[in-house]
Amino acid sequence: MHADPPPVPRGLRAVVVRAAGGAGAGLEQLVGGFGTAVVALAVLAALTVAAVTVPLGAGLLLAPGALRALHALAGRERDRLSRWGPEVVAPDPAPVRPRAALADPTTRRELRWLARHATAGFLLGTLGVLLPLLAVRDFLFPAYWRLAPQDANATSLGLGLATNWPEAFAVSVLGLFWVALIAVAAPGLARLQAAPGRRLLSAGPETDLSLRIAELTATRAAALDAHAAELRRIERSLHDGTQNRLVTVTVLLGAARRMAARDPAGADALLERAQGAAEQALAELRSVARGILPPVLADRGLEGALSGLAASCAVPCRLDADAPARCAATVEATAYFVAAEALTNVARHSGARHAAVTVRGGAGRLRLTVTDDGRGGADEEGGTGLTGIRRRVAALDGTLTLTSPPGGPTTLEVELPCGS
Amino acid sequence: MRIVIAEDDPLLREGLALLLRAEGLDVVATAGTPDDALAAIGEHHPDVAVLDVRMPPTHTDEGIRAAVEARRRVPGLPVLVLSAYVEQSFARDLLGGGVGGLGYLLKERVGRVEEFLDALHRVAGGGTAIDPEVVAQLFTRSHRDTRLERLSPRERDVLALMAEGLGNGAIAERLVVTEGAVHKHIRSIFAKLDLSPADRTDRRVAAVLRYLEDRG
Picture 1: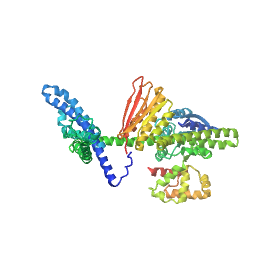
Picture 2: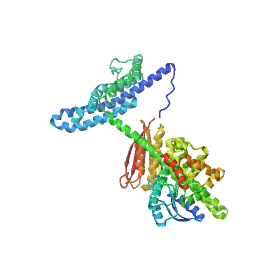
Picture 3: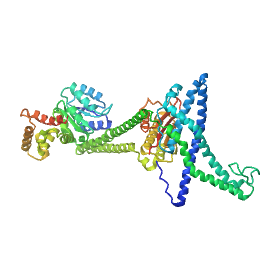
Picture 4: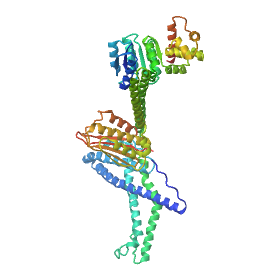
């Protein structure tokens, strides 16, 4: 799913482009960090209140909520940092009961991170927000200085008064200084802001990664299982479908040959049946081949393939696809099969009048939603279709959510990591 | 000849019945599941049962198990098994208890009507019909028995045809040699496989079984 890297320009332009790119990314990280730092301040406040009020008893009631917020925030920060660099691997899920949390190394590390991020991280984030504002304010000063009150400070530093055009342009030069400062310092500031998170939020040397390993092993085994099941399905449809059809053809042809001399009309009838069986074999072969990897997926991408599915669905189906990047072939194939299976279910069981398929991409995830206005009450235990979907999705580390109250509507939501 | 057919694919089942009836054979019952097949066999006591290997519920070896069970209930019942592909373990399970009145053919052989009918009659008469493909695989994969190594290429050809269930005359015809030459080859095979002269049919069966057993 990686886009081609932009061509590397040369000379002065190259330096400017690279600096601008680095500064932009740095600023974006700082501002993102500012967002989590503001929440971190709130969580820190909540935890402090909880700690202080423990003697009164209220703290014990407050603590689980605050700890849950801490874990959620830490999880968000891990995701955010993972987007900007190496993945920050989450340790085991941390406890939310105060006593267990105090002993839990993960929670303690999260607390240390919280203290740093709510203070230093917050200040660095503030810089990330302020610097561009200052740069814009000062650089554009000549454009609006005559509208400003006479005794207002000219520069964002709070110093000096501008009373004539040269002085106003001098302020604009200060704006350029801010821009230069951003270009030079932003990447470093961003790294500084991210450092505590990278160090403290990843699984520490003392944390036990066995759970994560067990999880990876299980999903890997599930992937192999899913593949084996898939191969079995293909083998079976070849042997029990296509091959049987072809055997039928040879049987009928053999019988027709024997009959040709003594009963030409009967032989002709047999030949017609043989032809019918051969046509069926072709149709089955086509469907088997499509089941392996839909050619349409390779030709027209996920969106094109899904629009084909939606168009051929027995229930009128609307497609709303907005997935800019292409995902790994297995991911797209899985999304396609999920949609196909879901629409088959809609057509067979739901009694719906309308269905809709939505695809969204971005942030390394592919989200697929299939909804219908049918009678609902879809039960995962009821049919093997949904179980099959779940297995395929789990094999790719994806998630599946099915909501289908009696009376409908039914919504199937699948989220898949895009892979690369 | 009275026949029971068990095949889960309705079109193929119908095609088989049609073919056999057109040949003047009496298809007394057709079945789509192993249980139905066993019931039909119990009821009609056919001269031969034709069973598909893969049948519901699991589509693996139901036909083989049904064949073994049918022969347990009706000892010596001739059974011809049709398979989508060669699976040695199936052949071994099926033939392990003796090869008399047993056949194991790939499905596509049915289209060669004369050969198929020939095999069917042979099995119904207590003979053997093992698919050339099965025999060929046994040959390529049974190099462990050094006694088999002693056979000349021509003797292997003869043994392969014996394993298919052909008689001396038919073997001579296939190999375009005289029956006397075939007879000589077979004597040599028996000698090399250390099969002492006894009843000839038993030695033929024993020679074929040697391949199957050596597979284990």
